[in-house]
Amino acid sequence: MDRQPDRLKIATTFGGGRLTAELVYAVLSDGSYRKHLETLRQRLAKAMHSSAVRLKSLGITPWIDPQAGMFLWCRLPDEMDATDVARAALGRGLVLAPGNAFSLSQTARSFMRFNVAQMQAPAVFDILRDVLAAQRGRDIA
Image (cartoon, rainbow, N blue to C red; front, side, top):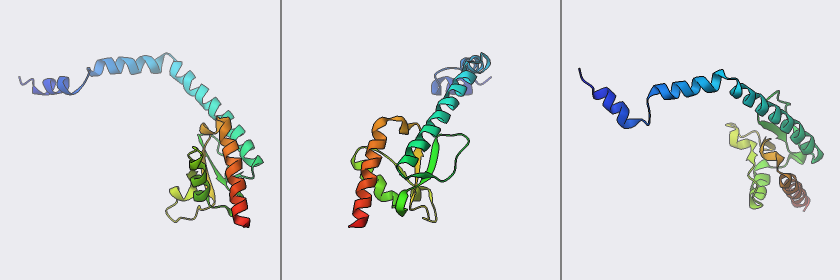
């Protein structure tokens, strides 16, 4: 009987499948994982709502109101170029996702995808407010 497959398994893993299987079984069967997921869903729903409200106050309007998830797609005010907004925000330490980064046809120029978990930091809205004001000033000049 050739024991080569067993030796290979031992040499390339940190444990047998049984330990992993028992761990996964315990996590999934005791209800704690389900409770954890429900807590996350509730936190994301609250973050989604508060982010949408605060973004609207800056003139950034949600394109759709998602039922769940962590991303909120929005249209920037005054047909602003999302890449310019993202670049200016990056200069202030805030990473944003311009719509065209996700668009094969490059038709999402004035759209931005916001991560609602990231939006809970108070400085995010201060930076956005400043960047939008600077973009409006640049467009007028």
